[in-house]
Length: 173
Image (cartoon, rainbow, N blue to C red; front, side):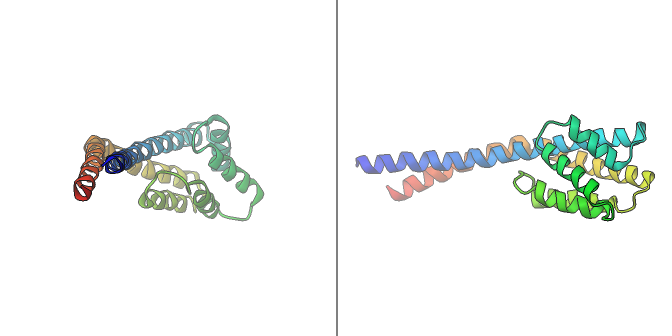
């Protein structure tokens, strides 16, 4: 009887933990998208108002930004300096593949980020600004969508973890 009780408690803790872990991933994804939004907004401001080129804005952002994208920005800046003949879009894609490997972003988020890099294929200033504005509006819509469902989804994941734990315990007793 004692072993069953210990097993039941372990099952409950682990299933609850899994539910809370899934709920935390939603928050982490929202935070990463918000960080990405503010970073790109800062880069767009450099391009638009200080008339910086895209590589200059990446370099400035890399020096000012201290978050989960800072290592990615430094790598992107180094690759742009080291590969003058390679297009920005190709460098963006390579750096994004490496930099977003362990993020909480979904596959669709990562794909959209890669597609943004494709908008940078034509390096004219107006095209870059238009690409930034388009991506930032899509990103803002996604963040708003996440904000509207985050409470419901986190409650759902937590409740499902608890209910699955109870179900497994009842099943084995």
